[in-house]
Image (tube, rainbow, N blue to C red; front, side, top):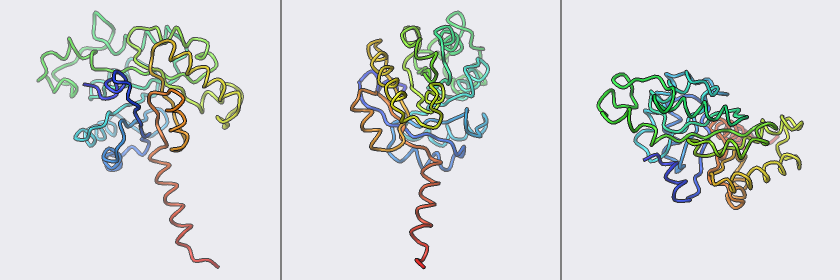
Amino acid sequence: MNRLKQAFLEKRPAIGLWQGLATPYTAEICAGAGYDWLMFDGEHSPNTLQTLLAQLQAVAPYPVEAVARPPAGDPVYIKQYLDIGVRSLLVPMVDTAAQAKHIVASTRFPPRGIRGVASATSRAAGFGANAKYLAEAHEDLCVITQIESRGALTEIEAIAAVEGVDALFIGPADLAGSLGHLGNPAHPDVKAAIEDALARIIRAGKPCGIFARDADQARAYFAAGFSFVSVGTDVGLLAHGARDLAARARPKP
């Protein structure tokens, strides 16, 4: 069972960690660190299908759900991600219900959708060993659409109502830029928009996720009603840890 979907069904808060280093070594370290899900970024990180595959293989033994974000909601990207074994997709820049429907269709084999058919060569199908994969694959997928623009805010109810959209995820950074506050997701206008979006998504009956900058903000988001929160990034952990260590180790003049 998809671990993230299971958490949604059981109404358990799920904490995640953004993966941008694009290496299986660090992915495996993070997989054993106690997170519920890891988000492998193909939009703003140097991931290829090969690097993503290696990371999926590295984290497979661990009880963590691998979520992957393709560069865009393109059926070609979605098909390739699903074939190598991604079960949970975080799709960026979804502004309309029509886009959401097309994305969902891209995750379903005909006649349910438009996903290209592969089984014998697909890692997701056990390279042909899973005879039920073509008929049942969609049942274990989790499709999450990102709300990160002024236009998307107006379409929340319509996007949430699309069959096959399992959850919505608010992207504070892009949303701040769209609202005229680039680089300032803490601006009161952005915070108000996030609060309103969360309330509407909850009313629509869908789980809502968001990116948090630190542990305190993550806890506040969970308390506010968010179902799943990503706190920080692997890049940030390494960068901040390295700078902090250097600063503390340097002899004082």
